[in-house]
Length: 93
Image (cartoon, rainbow, N blue to C red):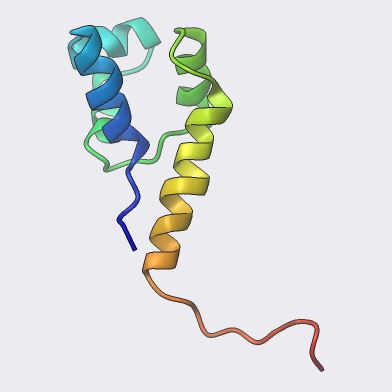
């Protein structure tokens, strides 16, 4: 299975780099700290719903799409890559 792509990497490479912005300028435009943005861009923090809403307001996709990248693609992919936990079915007595 392929490693899922963190939305911070997409934001870093496909948005910020393509627009020729710096991390400082991007953070200022989004109204967040440079440190908070940097943690997401370097994949040390999750992309929050707050940041997703700010990205949407800044004209960079929809909040729903950013959150889907985080939860459905990255988080779920990482959990599945870690292996299936030992569980028992709920519908069998």
